[in-house]
Structures are given as C-alpha cells and as structure tokens.
Length: 74
Image (cartoon, rainbow, N blue to C red):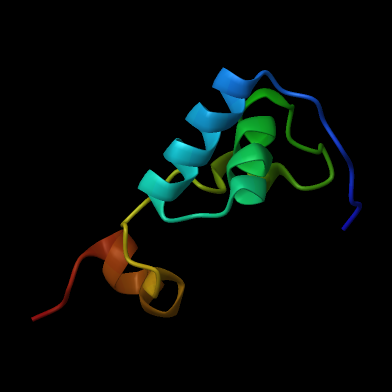
C-alpha cells in the first residue's frame, strides 16, 4: 500500500466523509472505490472487472459468499 496526500475543497471533504460514514467504510476506502470505478482493470487480472459489483451490506458477506451469490439454501 502506498500512502499519498490529496487536496480537496472543504465541501468535497465533508461530503466524502459523510458518504463514507453512510456506507460504513473509511474515507480511504471510499477514495479507493471511487478510483477503481474510473480506472481500467489490469489486463493481467480480468476477473477484477467484476470485483465489487455485489454489495450485500453484510460485513461478513465474504465468509458467506455462496449465500450472497446464489441465495440462501433451505
């Protein structure tokens, strides 16, 4: 991970912090997700085109990926 610094307007910073809190993620994670939405995926990892398209709202969803993708089996 590389640490960097950016300059934002006060309004953009406040809005981004509010959105990160609404989503339950850190400000840094919000910035990473925004970048991933505009940067092309690496040709070496074509599966990355699909990363992040499923959002369950459940912080444990990665542990229950089959239920998220295929639905709960009864």
